[in-house]
Image (cartoon, rainbow, N blue to C red; front, side):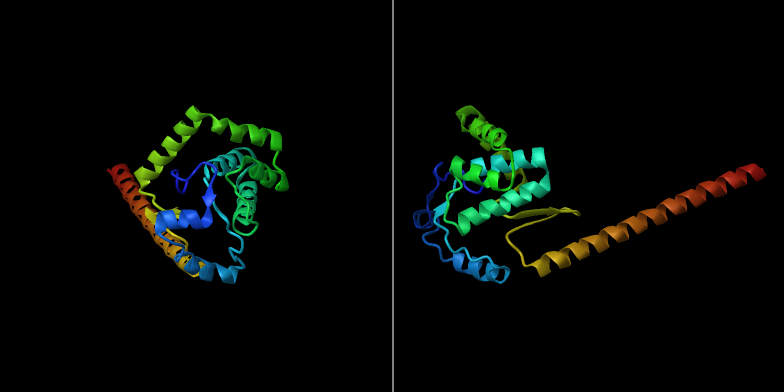
Length: 198
C-alpha cells in the first residue's frame, strides 16, 4: 500500500495533496514524463486507499496468473487516473474484475473478507513490516539480481541499460564459475592419472 493513513474510503485529490505535500506541484513532472506513452492523468479525482485493490490483485495473481493480474492493474489505473473513479470502492473493483473476466463472486469474497477488522489489520501489519525490512518508501520499487534495488519510475532507456549491465555481469560470473569448475576437474583428473601410474 502507498499510504495506510489515507481514509479507507479514499480522499478528494486536491484535499489529500494539500494535506500531505502542501500541493500537487510534483504531479506536473509525472504528467510530462508519462505523456509520450499516452498517459494523460486526465481525470484524477481521488487519492484512493489501495488496500482492497491490492487484495484483489493478489487474489488475481494467485488464481489467474500474472498476465491476468497485469490486465486488471491496467484497468484499475485507467479507472483511477482517466475515468475519475474511486478504486477504494469495492463496487468499482468488481467492475474492473468483470471487465477483465475474473469470476466476480469468488473475487468479491476474497476482497470483502479483508473488510474484517482483524484480518485487515493483520494484513496491513505484515505488509508494513515487509516493506520496512526492505526499506521501501516509494513505488514502483525494483529488486533485481546482484542486490540492485531502487525506487521511482524510470525511463525505459534507463531500465534497458541497467538490465543489460546486470545480464553482462551475470554472464561474466557464469563464465568465471565454469572456468573454475574446469580447472578443478582437470586437477582431479591429473591426480587420478598420476596415482594410476604409481
